[in-house]
Length: 99
Image 1 (cartoon, rainbow, N blue to C red):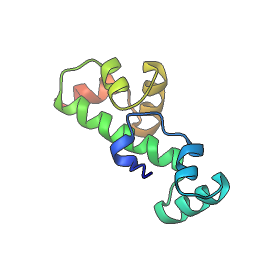
Image 2 (cartoon, rainbow, N blue to C red):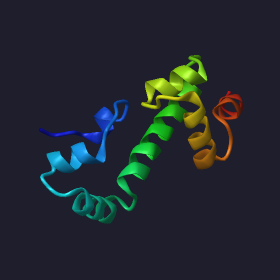
Image 3 (cartoon, rainbow, N blue to C red):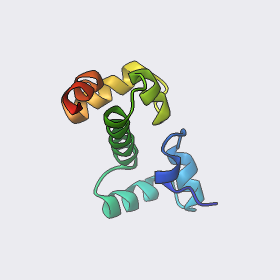
Image 4 (cartoon, rainbow, N blue to C red):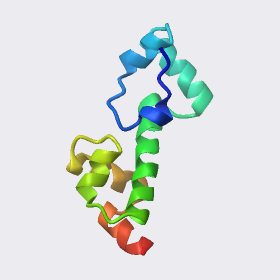
């Protein structure tokens, strides 16, 4: 069973699941993934979610909480903290600068 990350980033995607689908150990999967993508599996998924969140913040009027949940975060506060660490401003500030 294939798990295309770019189609499933809104769901909980565990390292155990993807390594199982790839029929390799978690350690081996992490090593192969980082060599191919230049980022850890977790960093890759987070980056994809942050990118999609930025698109939603620029192109919709849905709340920051809805953006967080729509891109796969289960907590608005966790989303805001990660967004700030990646983009260097909060999602609300990002939205204001985008318009």
